[in-house]
Amino acid sequence: MVDVLQILTQFASDNGHQLLDRGNGEFVFQFNARLKDGTKRTQIVWIWIIQGRAFGKDCLFFSSRVGTFTPTVDLYSITKDTGKAIYSNLTIVHDTDSDGNPCESLVVQASPILEYLNADELTLILREVGQLADYIEGNYFHKETY
Image (cartoon, rainbow, N blue to C red; front, side, top):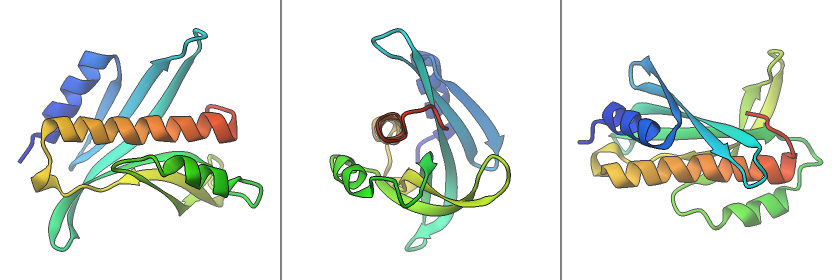
């Protein structure tokens, strides 16, 4: 089985990103990207190990918020755009906003079975979740939300 902390630490270090190990198999990964116009964007991906999630097998769960779901969100276009994903998907989850009020959030997530993962696939999935979430956030919510 892969050493998740070691792989995430190395990937963050090699690529100028940040990693927070919260303990108990929970991590916060911050992508830092510089765009062509010189502006910077960040995207947070939460990662945690969930025991027994997939038919009794442990999974590595990735989740990155995109924005708050409202009836005006163009879910049709967003869903079409997320169809190009290889490992991740888009869902709507019950959440709370920054003021602690209940809301529903659009989230990009992936949940591969941990024992089948290798280092290359782990970083590919992490990159896909972060980049897809950032793309949707920037193109459909037009701001740096999460």
